[in-house]
Image (cartoon, rainbow, N blue to C red; front, side, top):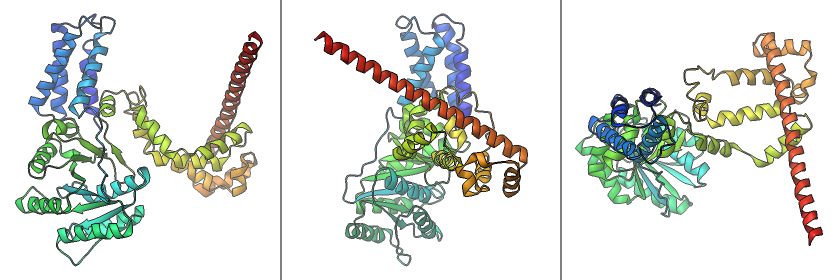
Length: 453
């Protein structure tokens, strides 16, 4: 995502390398490259031109203010601020004040509406501690009700459906009554899409909105369609006046034009971005973090949030005790792998680390590597997993046969595990010693203070 744009912007900033200050002359080429980068990312030329004019104005206005900052660094900061502003400035929350609150989902066929409905239900259930109800109001596409039912089963969220009823308004109103009777606090209404914007589709979704008076009407659009996504969003908003946008398929080969300009063009915020088919791949859209990622600065805040979602304080304390006693075993290692898997794919996680993602963007990560490690551990007996020291040559050969890997790979993994185990033990002891020393110093300070009084 945004790889091409990031590379082009990087080149634009490098054109200022070696310059001692910003001038009208040396900034001209940089600004031109920024404009070209935006247009190549499928940003409307008029918007790209206006954007770069603002960047140029701010850069020249800062000439006498920030003399200690290098021109390249200054341009990065200005472009970051302007990109953040272009994409909406700050994240927009979802309105869930109703009892129950109603979220109406709209969009073209194939945009990912039904999958997003499932992802949103999963998000609200696990991260907002809500009790959602999915509602199947796509009465035209034969597989739509079945698809939503399967998604609901996967995330353990009920689906309200009336397969024989072809009136979406009746179904939606009945679902709200059902939600009130059964204690659901959020109703997510999945509606029908069409291959293109048409009068019949608009009338149907408008009737649903009028009948339901939803807290949120979200327009779902495929980010990979670029500027077409922006134009479709504008057509929908002109007639529907929705509350926010959801960009799906953000993990695809998208040039980013939709994410960059949809807020500017439509005047409605991007509320969520969806990546991949997995039902936990939904993120709140943060313009400032997205700007940082576009400029290769990483996104450490999102990375920490993902880690915290998987963090179990009691488990961490238990592990610390085991590491301190050098008892960290393969079962513990397996649980750590599961936590990493739940955070997302490795390349996506590494791209969030400042300074690292850009350096490793062309490196191919073997997503099966963790699976190979798991296969090795699953080929061990329960006793071997608890006591790594039991692994002699005959046991290693049996494990190699069990997981279908070479004996050298087994030896390498066990050797690396042993080294990691020793390093973790050493670091934990050092942290303990540092903490004890800090307490001793504070205690001594308090005692000296007592004697002076």
